Image (cartoon, rainbow, N blue to C red; front, side, top):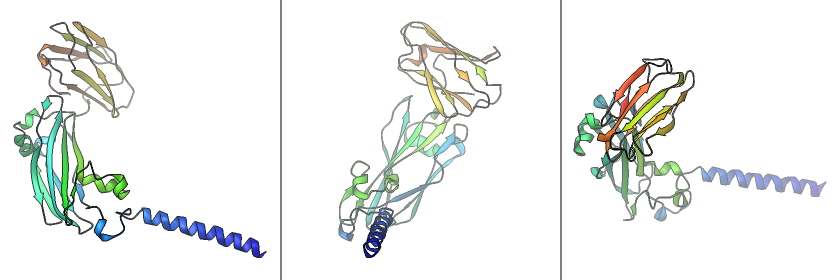
Length: 265
């Protein structure tokens, strides 16, 4: 009986040790327990991370920058635009030394920083934000060196890289369920050179293109009740590209191009 009791007590001790370890794993900065070696910890709380394209002209980017652990001297926020229409430089926005701080810009302002107008922003574009910070110990932190090996908590890296997506509005003015037809043309005859027409069905995307030659036809199938978004992504020679869309009942939905716009709705 004593041996059985010892065995049970041993199991309980192991269980308590495991539970204690699990609790420790949930604590932030759990790898470096001593204060001198803790990684700088910055938290970014974003007001919204996805907008329909028609919402963007009146929308505001707002993020609260805070430090759950008081070991951050400064935090720098920059941004760029990820878009099929071109490559854009990274623009510095703010340096924060007092926490918490709220950073606010309209998307009209952000587009202007890139040399664009708000009309240049379209479905599928991504405002990509990156942060860097300097700890009070002088160490410099970026998304590249702030890894799970340092803290064990992926959420602690959110202030170093986060995105805002511009989404095309869903197609709601026609019955979408059934087989659509896409007729695509390239006036030069060498395909669409990287451009695509994307069907997003309940968030799952399929890209269609003219792989080579003058034309191609595709027949996407859209299930009943699905949310359908259609958008064009740019290639190297958009001025050569045209396409027509036909709804499942055979009616022409639209004739687009040359140089089609980004959103089809």
